[in-house]
Length: 98
Image (cartoon, rainbow, N blue to C red):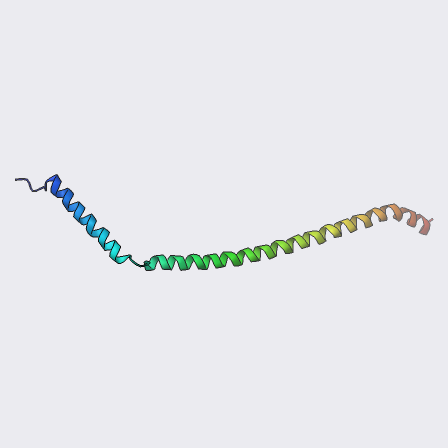
């Protein structure tokens, strides 16, 4: 009459399928799966690339800091020269053009 399996039989079949899948996973994945090995290789390569990028970033930061120091010193020197020119310039012009 009813073609549907009984709940107990359905549960038993699902449990059998689950046991089969688990045992299959255990057999297949006793060693490290190739996809995990491949991902580890990619992460190691990315780690190497990030380390190289970090090194480059440090060099760039040092270079920019050095340039900033030089620009600051040059602006300070030009400011001093400008102040001296403003103080001495009118006096020199009066001496040259009385």
